Length: 89
Image 1 (cartoon, one colour):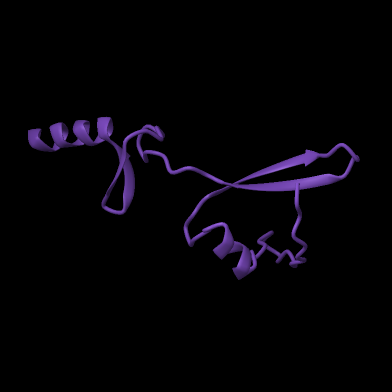
Image 2 (image 1 turned 60 degrees about the vertical axis):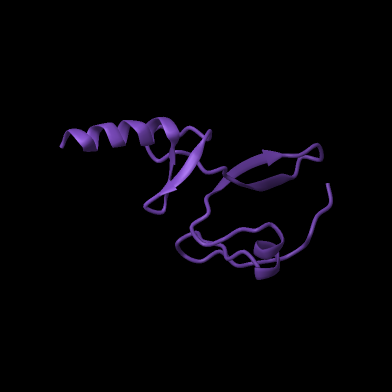
């Protein structure tokens, strides 16, 4: 695995700012969610892995057949349920 070295301080709330060049290279945008994994590699070194999370439906967390409704990802199944519920109101 190729590594890119950058050092960043951790603030008192535990936050780390990702460098702009890395955010741009990996298309990490404001409000994106990152999965954080802690592992120990073959050399016994502790490493942190950041992985961009795939968008999921805000209701059922499915990642299939998503559409944006009101700025939020909603799957077709939940979208259909919403339309049905709203038509009853």
